Length: 277
Picture 1: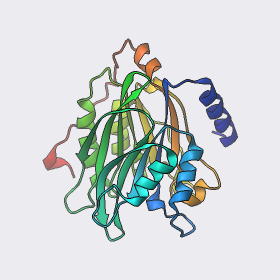
Picture 2 (picture 1 turned 180 degrees about the vertical axis):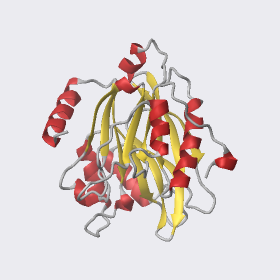
Picture 3 (picture 1 turned 135 degrees about the horizontal axis):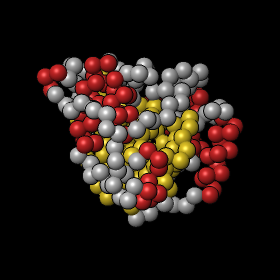
Picture 4 (picture 1 turned 90 degrees about the vertical axis):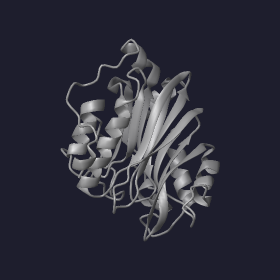
């Protein structure tokens, strides 16, 4: 899609639609370390403002040395963007402590944390949050999957189990850095099979994006009104990923199906611990 056309479409919809539509994004901020080698949380906060969404799932948010997410970086981003911060699972490796987070201006009704870790690999997790979108409860999952194919297969199986437990009438959004390089990889096919085909736009690496690593799935799928990669000069420098953003008509999606979602009938795997890898 032509970027100018996409931005015109986004701005037109944003001005036309009311608060019953959710503006949501996924952004791997790379601990606020930019492609120019500088770590600058103010610059990332500026990109979040630029995106124009009221809810953003973040990946690679730096924590303090105790691995806690009430760190200066997350607090700073929440304060600068006037959003509530929900911290997620912490990853600890040679580069320090970091993990997922959710920033939102919407009322938060409930939060659940899920461990998606694979033994001997970096800890991974998912945030599951119920948000009040103009009177409708929408469930949002934020995650960051592992670097190895076996990890991702295991983690997506765990995610599928969580998604199978969501009431069918409940709108669902799954977003994050999926780290799946192959467009026909099994984790993507499994998620598409349950939630419908997610749009794919290149978001990594930020300067010259080649891979669509950052995704947004919506159930019901017809509630997704707009999707795109946020490509600006500042976004190409602020992190090694570009943000992706979506406009979702939550109420329209629920009402169109009479409050009941009829999912794609393709089979998707349930978690099997012994065969996970």
